Length: 123
Length: 112
Image 1 (cartoon, each protein chain N blue to C red):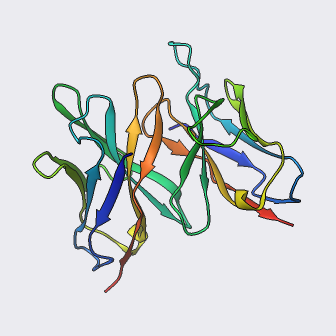
Image 2: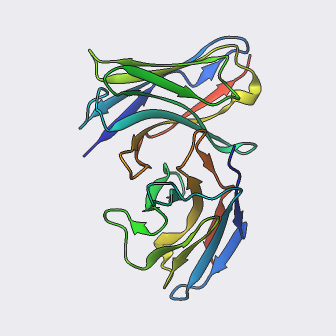
């Protein structure tokens, strides 16, 4: 059974960088059939997919246009985890952030979610 | 981006009675491989969302058979044959066809 454990600060100052990590157990970040995603949830935006990283003989990323200029999602194969970095944050980035496993290969669904991290952007 | 629209926003239900939630996509979710990429998720109070239905009509592992999904193209339905108290929460449809992956706004199911 796949488990995702999130870590990172719950408070970030405006203009700084939001950084979260998701540790994976029960699967590999280098899996050829999974993708590793970040999704956030807020009252104003609902559930919003931010982006993903995945390995298919080489590493690739996809990002939402709304955050593309500010986001980086990186795999860490040595620790079997992946991270989210969102820079130049504003109060509009306040949300619960989830790391999530995507199962592709003709199925296409999110089957494992982290516990969620409430990140507040405030001075 | 594909826009997902759910209705109703809120659904008060009586235990033991059926319930139905609608979801509409702004473009067809039918892929050339023959699959329709529409998922349903339930977010129980205080929890992360969990997968209920994938490929429009396939129940995820461990999901009770009182949950069923149907539909094609742009119109989809999630049905609960007999609502139980543990089914309360927010239900979301999501299109899994194209990035950016997009969710409906959610339907709150609560017990009358």
